[in-house]
Amino acid sequence: MWYLLAVLQFFEVKEIHKPEGQWCQHCQLGKGCGIYAQRPHECRVFDCNWLIGLMPEHWYPKRSHMVVKLDHDVNSVSSTMFVIVDDRYPNIWKTEPYYQNLRHMSRQGLNRTSFVGYFFTVVRLNSRPKNGWLILPDQEVEWRLGEPMEIRQSGNHFRVVK
Ligand code: SF4
Image 1 (tube, protein in one colour):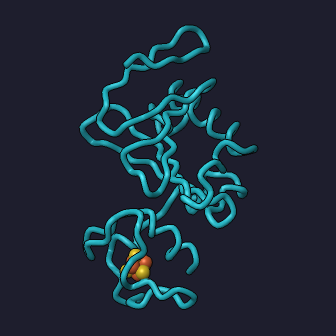
Image 2 (tube, helix red, strand yellow):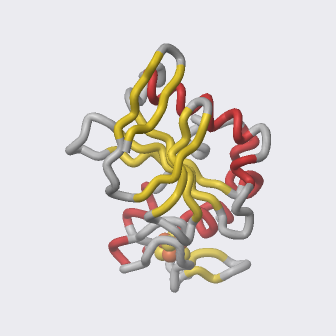
């Protein structure tokens, strides 16, 4: 129950017009979902990478204060792996072992060595859905939603050309 309440605050629930980054009006802190039996389909089918077993145990959202979820764009050949950080712990993604995990995730996505195929890794704060950091295997660069970016590879290194 903690998972459903705390993690879903990061995401939009269209069926009940709940914006992302805000607590749901049906959330009863300390109790649970006030409409659990009738909760929207989006809530019933929601999962994140940790819940479906794709992340190590230390990524449990209550412990890591981050939620990882793949956003697949059907109009694009690539997807974005969003790492959404709880605003109360804005720099936790820079601590270990998370930082190395993110770099590894980035390398997997850019080298297509994950079963998901080609993806970008983006870290952003819960309250700032349009800004964040694009994670590359050996650096991170500022990211803005919709801003065109080209990633070029030279050997084992990747860099961004804006
Ligand atoms: S309807 Fe219930 S499960 Fe869905 S976001 Fe609101 S509190 Fe959470």
